[in-house]
Image (cartoon, rainbow, N blue to C red; front, side, top):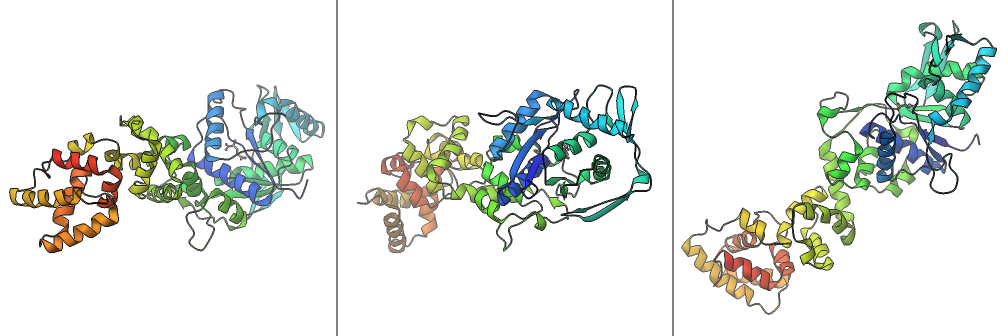
Length: 438
Ligand code: GLU
């Protein structure tokens, strides 16, 4: 077992899965998958007041959403539940008895306290931060078991990491200061240390510790805003690590192949929404059409658009024509509303900027366009080019009203691709509404 990598994510169920927690879970998961090791989920629910089953559930479903599956649990057969500290109290009690017998701990009422020896140098080699040393003299005695019978974090974490055979403790750098206390307990119990790898802090753009002030902090909020799990995964993996060669967009599988704990940098990383948006857009673009449709559809429905009035094929193709516009599924839904119905076009545009003279030109052009034998984007484009040259009209003076008339937007994907996809009859209907064609 010593050679096998075993890592754990050990959240306290006192809140949702936050960006920091998701990040820690992900780095543990990546290390396990990279090395063929095991990833364990351990719920640290010893704070009875603040721990809830609801938080435990949201943490687990947040992990599932990110695709961070764990490999072990106390329940065999069926999907694994997590380990829970509240279900392991006898293990903590046993080790505490031993330390009491050996005089390394003492009782204070019902509580058990660890006696910190003086004059000991505590040291460990952190995979990210390098060698860290501390003198035991600076530490106060450590409460191991509280009077309510529950173990404290610094004690339970040692008993668990040892008895679960954890090889690498990968966690946030805020735990560096706890580590020397934990080393003392390892020493007292005669156990070897695991390897420690503390992960650098995540800061907001203002270089302050990430908090609510910086926007959404729970992993779930990103799901609800229309971000893809693969891009949140990709984004979190880039906080403190990178696969090199400026490769910023990668799949779960690629990250799993390339991940290396030894290459995590100790500089704090910055949470940058623009970067997340960019990554999400790149992942959206790479999705097969029907997968993209599955992501965008709920947002179309939320906007009240007539999704069911169209075939699946038409809807999926609409997003192909949209050609990567929109950084999130929600944005893509907003940028493609005109494919589903004419109503939002009329709300955005009224055609009143077109004067009589230009309107006459438009009417001639559109009549010829709508009479084309083949309703295909390249044919329309070629025809428009020739028509503008032959009639001495600027291409944009005929193409822009066409774009506005069918999409209601000044910026859209290729106007002829949009026209082809909408179909000749629908384009005729929309242009007629603005009196751009007889
Ligand atoms: N329950 C602790 C936390 O959520 C775990 C720390 C650790 O991984 O040792 O911060």
